[in-house]
Amino acid sequence: MNGDPLRDLVSIEIYRAVEPSPALVITRPPSRGPAPAGDQAPGSSARREAANVRLAETAFYREAKRIDALPVAAIAKRTRGATIVYRDPLAPLFAGGKLPSSLAYAVISVRRGGERSPLSNIVPFSPAVPPGPPTIIRVTPDQGRICIEWIAPEKDVTGQPAAIGGYRIYRRALPEEDYDAPLNADPVPGTVFVDTTAPPGARVVYTVRATLPGKPKIEGVPAVEDGVDYRDVFPPAAPARLDVLPETAAVRLIWDPVAAPDLTGYVVYRAEGDGAPVRLTEKPITDTFFTDTSVQPRHRYRYTVVAVDSAGNASPPSPEAVADTL
Figure 1 (cartoon, helix red, strand yellow):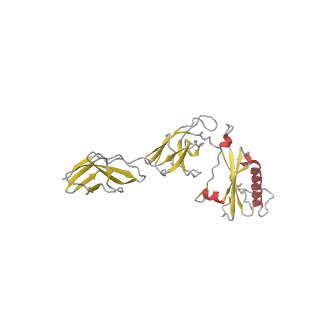
Figure 2: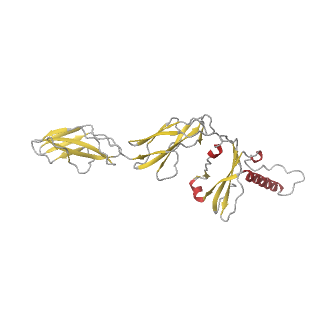
Figure 3: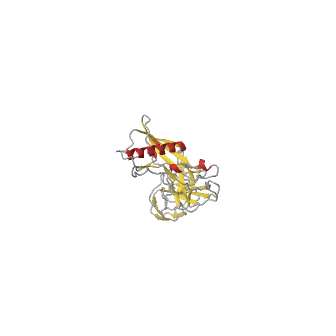
């Protein structure tokens, strides 16, 4: 592109040439050198440069194929600041097990009415061979986290032994179809990742991509995705200690707090004699103390306390405490 603002933009077309001829390996227009002898007319160098650009464009279009056309909505999704980022999946080029030695790219803009811009600069490069797909072996939910485990790919996309620099992990929540940015900005070296940011109450799906050593931006083929229903079925811990203090016409209870990020509160139970426990608090209470004023004198009561989280999961009961009223 020439840097001018794109008005009435309809799309941006991306072109790719595989094994481009040496004549295309020019990343910028030819410099304005001295005019040949006998060609000193005003504007002659500009005409020569324009002619060279047209020849380069014609040669590129002859060898290249359009691989994509991004409408305005797709451009907006790929815009990072003043830059448009496009990823070209090269897997089809590796299907035959042979890596192209060079590729060349260029883009054009298309405006309303079909007006097409000149071809951008042509960018050639030699592609690196990405790793093959890892194999996800387990996705295990736990309280506040999900653990993803996988096996490293043994080969790259051409069938040769794979060189691995690390891994990036991607997650999507159904029914979303696209993956967000990787969960880890920097590739992790091992084959285990713990996700502590998954939204509870949803089915989440993961994939993993290996990167090349020293080239973290080059990612291999994604693993076959695997997912899990991430629902909170993990109860908080039980209060570790419960003390009871009999008083006149009342029993005071005090217990140790439970450390749980999603704790809602506590439910107090009381049993009389050999009877079954009866719930005393209709709703969970947030304090770590409670006074039972419904007791009878000269009775024996057994108390327990249960912790409850925001998903309704109840802990095991605390140790039982016995109170003999006065």
